[in-house]
Structure formats: structure tokens, C-alpha cells
Image (cartoon, rainbow, N blue to C red; front, side):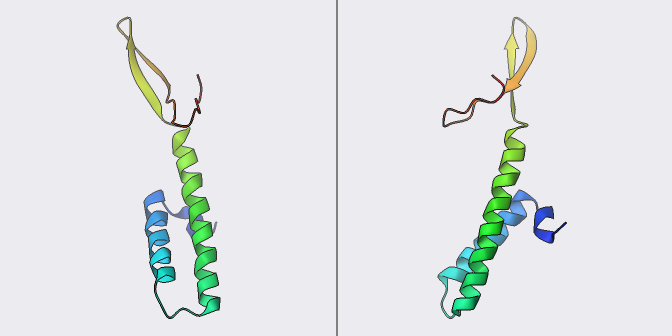
Length: 83
């Protein structure tokens, strides 16, 4: 498994921030800029994957008629998972 796929969301986000800072800086060659851009795209995809994994696990705990009931969280944007 490639090293990036083992990164946590937080670690991938930190690396992505470093990539953005490098791209915003001066003095990069065109080839270096392209390499940073490609790394950034991989990191964005990894962050999205990690978010989707967590999204599927989020649940809301409700109290109905004195009993604890769980259901999946309704997400902004009209996506309701499991309802």
C-alpha cells in the first residue's frame, strides 16, 4: 500500500497545506510545480476518501419514547444516508 494511502485525514490535510504553500511560493520550476500539483490532487482524493469513510459511520443518537435510538446523520446538501 502506498505511503499516502496510510495517512490519516489530518496528516493528508497537513501535507496538502504544505503543497499549497509551495505552489504559492516563488522559484519553482515548471516541472516542480507540476509534481506538486499532482501530489496535491492525490492528497485531495485521499482526504475525500477519508471523509466518505467517516460519513458512512456518523449516526445521530435520539431519545424516542424513553429509548435510545440511532439513525444515520442527515447531511447538508440533501443527502440522507439510511433514512
